[in-house]
Image (tube, rainbow, N blue to C red):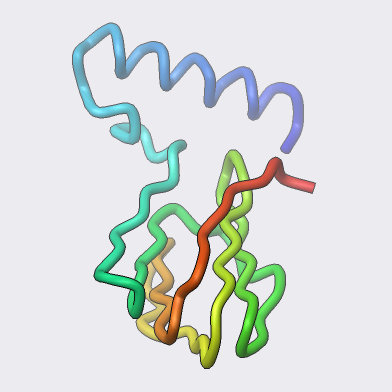
Length: 97
C-alpha cells in the first residue's frame, strides 16, 4: 500500500470515529464473522495470497488475515468477501507485505 493510500485510510478512519460512525463505514477496515470453529467470513478482502488445506492467507487493504487449521476450503466468493470452512484452529493478522 502506498504512503498516500495509508494516509487516506487513516483519515477516513478518524473521520468515521469523529462522526460516531462504525470504523469500517468507508470500507478500509476488514471485518470477520466467525461461526464456531468451522466457518469464518472475511469482509474487505482484496486477494487470496496463499491457499492450502491447512493455511489460508487473505489480503485486505490494511493487513493480511491468516487462517490455520485442517481441511480448509474457500467458498462463497463475493465482492470483497470470502468464506473459509473447515476445522479452524487459529486466526491471526499481519502487516501487508
